[in-house]
Length: 253
Ligand SMILES: [Zn+2]
Ligand SMILES: [Zn+2]
Image (tube, rainbow, N blue to C red; front, side):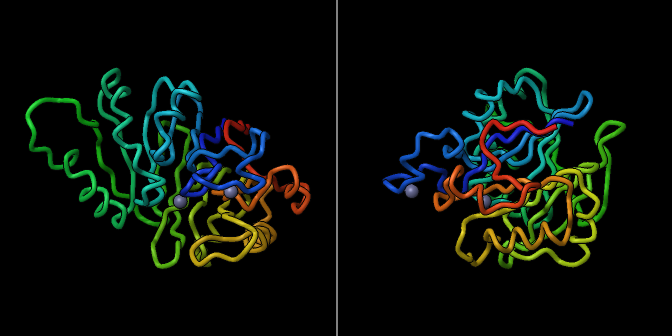
């Protein structure tokens, strides 16, 4: 399995508009962060997690040629507002499956009403096959990719963390309920939310993220959804050896 970080930034992206802090002015490419999204390649399957607001730029940069399915963590702008840009893939390959929980679907159907209840004449719309997923109801993509959706809480909002075999992606969360913690054990790689150094109302900060990693003990962990408080080179010294800040275009096997 190959994991590609398409974006690792918080909702504003980094650099942040009109900011002249050290990170926003940094020349280090690891301090340039598009909005969070990952691409998973396993066997002949290519899976996207979240159609970030930067999806078009990310797809061109990563040379995405095809997608088999899209998984949505939750319906916030930074995670879904690139949905319309999957159309060029639909034009080539037809409709694709899109997976989300009930909460996300009620917002997706409202925000993207022109997609799910089309009234206009003519084509040009995203072609999506909706699937509703339930917490802890695993299913398979192809014959060897087991997907286990696990519910986590982003403030009050139920968000889906996805486990794919021995890899898991858990972003935009403040609380991981005990049954979801159990679903995140024995991992090779965990990608975890870590918005900044200071505490945050709806995201893990660095100390909370490291405490979760200490409990779950994945072989390796990567922190994502990073804001401009985090300067990659300087703040990497705060991390234990098996934990790294993710950066855009990083590929992990
Ligand atoms: Zn987010
Ligand atoms: Zn800044």
